[in-house]
Image 1 (cartoon, rainbow, N blue to C red):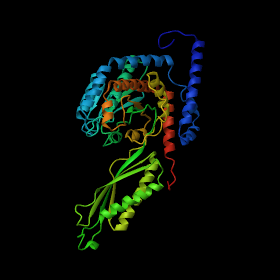
Image 2: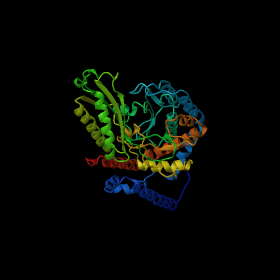
Image 3: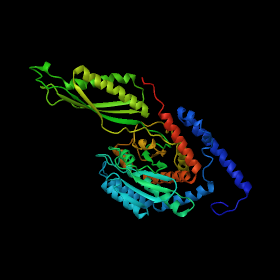
Image 4: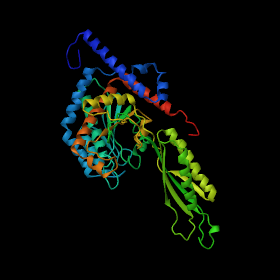
Length: 463
């Protein structure tokens, strides 16, 4: 008997299972072809990985879930879109998202979630529903950018996370045989203060098995990754003197900064094409008639992988310290941000997500849609602790990239709200597949473990 209450013969059931296994084996093979070579080598040592997709829930069960998910999201579309619109109308920057915090938390409380406000961070929250069993977290961002508001579409990210959380909750309510917990986690300050890093340190993800979110973009992607990033501050201390009368008695801190800037420029010849160092001199002295006793610089470094970023930081530090040595200045180097780690996308969940997203009309055929993105996100740090899916989705009205006024305008259009709810449905169904199958969850975790092991393979020290 199927989940829909219909009776089928054993032969019909077996044939359907064989057909499904054949299709899933084909997709598993395609997935493995797309993995990083180091990951594939590690996965070859896992006998079960060849059956990654064979233990997905029964098709009729997921069809029931799809109807529940679609119905509840469609039923609440107006209120969900109103939430996204409210956040767009009331943009708040990192750790000042007080209106957003209250509005989203109250919304989820009204939907039957148990909500903890001011969770670890003043503008974070944790809303949960369910009991024993695996735990899925939907990461909910809602901070805006200075001056240009929701030019990264975080109002839509929040709407998507809330919609997905409500959809999974509805399935749990209507199917007592599925035991799991769904959490919508308010994660403020992605743009500036890396709120997810603090939430990780505070234990917000300790009970989570998987975490998902989706980000507005100009292209649909299921598992495109992002760069690792680090912000660095530098201070040189010298000795002031009169620039005309006795300059030889001074130790010029501005010279140290200029020398460092030149050194970094020369270093770029030895960098891989996909690595980045950008820097500025923020303080080079106050008046031209005094040899500057102090100078300050700021750098942002980016690399595709975490180990590459650490290697690049070592090379940058050599450039900075050699200039201090040459000018006789002292130097202080400090990290101005935590390491923002490269996004470790889970390809198994990404493949499942793409299948559902395509059913809701998303097109993934655009060339290069799964290429690594040079942006960075604190979701990367989460993705190196638990399996994470962080797809991007296209805003049809976006004529420019994120972080522009034009993208902010696109983040409040009817087409963008519609796309957001389609993505929310696909995210919810992806989570439900994993929650419904212990074997699938196991394979998601095995892929995660293999990727982590591959990422820790040491790079050439001369990288």
